[in-house]
Length: 111
Image (tube, rainbow, N blue to C red):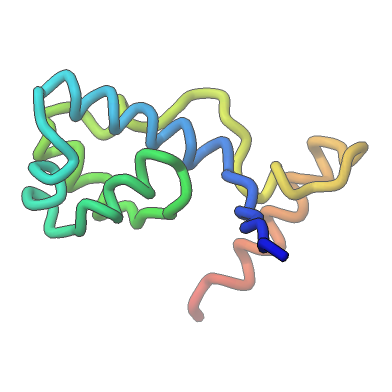
């Protein structure tokens, strides 16, 4: 029996960020290999970032924007729900989402 690989659903935020990175890379006329060399990542990482399958750190996003010569804001999609909001059950109000974000943020702060 042949196994079918089931991939984890992509976050809209990462998928759309990846599309913006791909568009900026192509506008510059670069291959994935060229961008990878510029930002010290593998070509596979660039592929996965562009497809929304790999999360990226802010410093990596900043470096990619700098090497492509675009403002970092051009690589961040507008109006996309955060990964946390995407995982919320249906029917959760905006105020409840904000409350959850606040509680989660308090747990991350150092004292």
